[in-house]
Length: 60
Image (cartoon, rainbow, N blue to C red; front, side, top):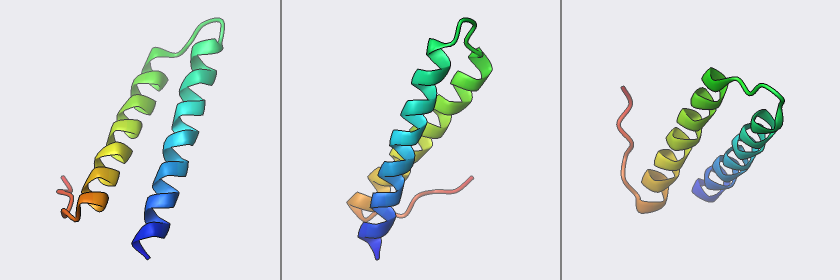
């Protein structure tokens, strides 16, 4: 079951990457949106790390 979760997180990471690229290509990129997307990408990365290493992520 863990591998399914990892697969979904990786897909979510790719989607966030796509959204960041799309936003940066706009004539006037929204800096707040880009910041939020980057925070989401980092959160996904952290969750993947914890899941793959067997650690339990800390939720705040």
